[in-house]
Length: 364
Image (cartoon, one colour):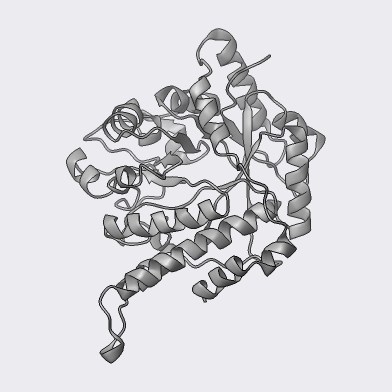
């Protein structure tokens, strides 16, 4: 079977590829892999793992959730501990005291530090063979969401935008793309979409004015977006990641976004339960793709025998044959655009780079 679009992002269970992993990654509909802390042992092991993945298919997109703070998959063997994004928001607000106070100086320091964080994060990952990190979080910090919390830069969407753009600039310096999440905003709801179905009852106008404001403001630099597994009933009865209203009418239409759209993890509770019914992973993938996602993630289902991964691959094969899903050449172009265009610096050379050392100093 051939396809002109590889929308599936899957994972593996261990530190190295098994023959089963290789067969799954070689499937024509698999376009990438997402790594987790369980896939980490050491830098040398990660470099070998990424090389082995690329040996299966050179254009597989190797992804990771590596934001900094409490969401950082690789933390040892030389990896820099990136601060939480809230740290930069707090730095923004600190203009000093007494004679040292200078209005606006905190904002300048914060933007420089966020750029440094993006550069360090991106260059260290790329030195190990990782292509892409799902960062930055653009959700606003209302103090309500435990799952977002200090992953957010700030409550003010203008501050979030400025700091996110600074971090994106650092990623770009490292040759890495970016992914704003979780559109249109996850910060206002308390429920965790991993285990529950969050509902945000606010009106569209308020959401666009506040939570979604960073997305059009970042339109010139935003390369990918991940929608929230949150229901906004005054806009649509479906979670944003399964909603044509949110993804096509609003994000692509009204906000004029033309980059890649990833689904969030299809194994999360808010992705499996649609219209009150539990649906299969294949059905969830089809609904997300047909709503407007370019790529869909299925995480943590490779553990054990990985039967759910195989069921998704078989189900998507069947959907392709029967016309329930039609490959999209534009979606494939968006996926390929996220692959780095430059060669990464080897780790030992990176450590000696003045730009890298300067960035580390800005983070300390």
